Amino acid sequence: QVQLVESGGGLVQAGGSLRLSCVASTHRLTIVSMGWYRQVPEKERELVATLDLTGTTNYAEFVKGRFRISRNSARNTVYLQMNNLKPEDTALYYCNVRTFPGTTEGTWGQGTQVIVSS
Image (cartoon, rainbow, N blue to C red; front, top):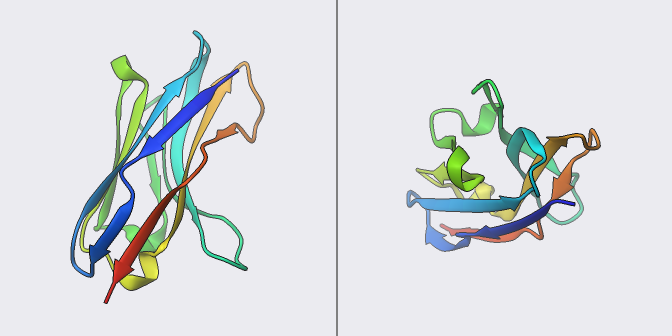
């Protein structure tokens, strides 16, 4: 079973930065990918960025050039550096980790709130 602990959300002014962290306890399962998604009320959860075991990254168009996903493999931690934040980035941000063996959906964190004021 995988446990995830997220941190780093908060309130920031537009143009500011935040760094989200997600520590995964995987009990020796192999991590296939780690990523961040976000959700606002009445909308579906959407991909922000993912990083797979080969180091390949995938970013949503709306964060390219502003957000950067990275990983500390030794600590089973994935980070999301968010720069030049905009009010429309306000959302609940979720960490997701997929492992082998594991499900295609993976495990979700509890979410960390990001609020960007204008």
